[in-house]
Each structure stands twice: as structure tokens, then as C-alpha cells.
Image 1 (cartoon, rainbow, N blue to C red):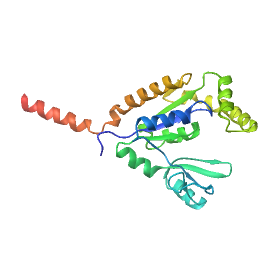
Image 2: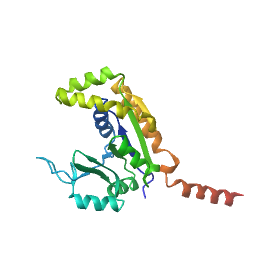
Image 3: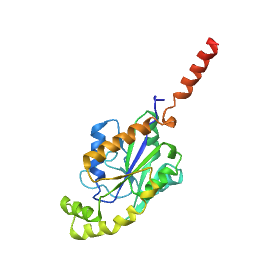
Image 4: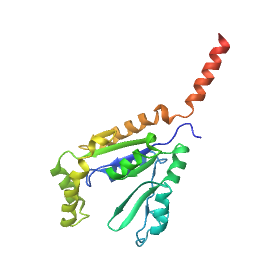
Length: 213
């Protein structure tokens, strides 16, 4: 067992609020933070590598994993199943490595209610305004006007769940938000439940105390 347990860091936001950029910055800051590799039943796209981009499973195999409690969270999206396998996450946090989840509020709820829930740190990113959110989506130039409109319609459903998270940050300044994120993670790493060696240390202190009295 590592000196500390790893965290399940859940980062959620509506599209355009800076989640992907900040996830990348967190991993650049601490290379031991890894992304949770999702499992999916969809067909691999050109260039995707099994086990790196996704874990590609048949639908029956995916459903067996769900039935056995081996998915921390799962959802059915546009005709395919997606989920977060439990075993690699458990191995990572037991080794003291944090795992980052880029998921929506529904996935966040499932993980928080799982057996690993006590080791989760959930953070929601809010945009400074809806107009700014729309501007960022347009500025990315990655989506058509139709896709942007769909993302904007979905954004309020995401935002409406802000109060279900441990921390909520308004991303009005990317650098400042990054600093706050790092502070939150460093503090969460020091929570008592994340330090499995404390019991042994306190027992040693008690033995030392008994010897001296």
C-alpha cells in the first residue's frame, strides 16, 4: 500500500467551460495523474488503439461487467454503451496515483455512490456567463452551428447539477482556475482517509508514549 491513496478526481462542466484544457494542464503539472480509460461498445474509429483510447467490448461482455459490479459508472449514449472499469482505477489509487474522470453529472453521481465514493473529489466548472460559453464554442471552430446549438441546449441541464459537487469554480480566468484546482487537489490528498499509514503512526506514537511514562 502506498503512503497515500490516490484520488478519483471528477471534473465536470458544460462544453466550452474549459474542462479539457484544465485536464491537460493538471496532467502536465503532475504526470502521475492518469485519465480513466473508458470502455465502450462502439466500433473503433480509424487510429484508435484498444486499451489506450478506449477499451472496446462487445455488448454482451459490457453487460457482464456491469452485472458483476465492475463498472464504476456507465451510460447508454447514441446507441452505444460507455463506462469506467473499476479494476484499473482501484489498482491506481491503491498505488497512490490519482485518476482523472472527464464525465457528466450522471457518471459523477454513480461514482460517488460506488464503493470508491469516499475517495472521490468532484469539481464542477462554471462559465462566467452563457454568452461567454457560446463565444468559446464558436471560437474553437470544431463544431458546426447545429452542433453548437445542441451543446448550448444541453449546457443548462449540466449546469443545473452544480450543487451536487464538492467544489465549484467559475472559470473566468484560466490561469487562476488552474491554481485553484491544484490547491484543491493538494488539500484533498491530505485528508485523513487518503493517508492509510496514519493509524500505524499513531499506534507507534502511543507505544512510545507508554514507554516513557
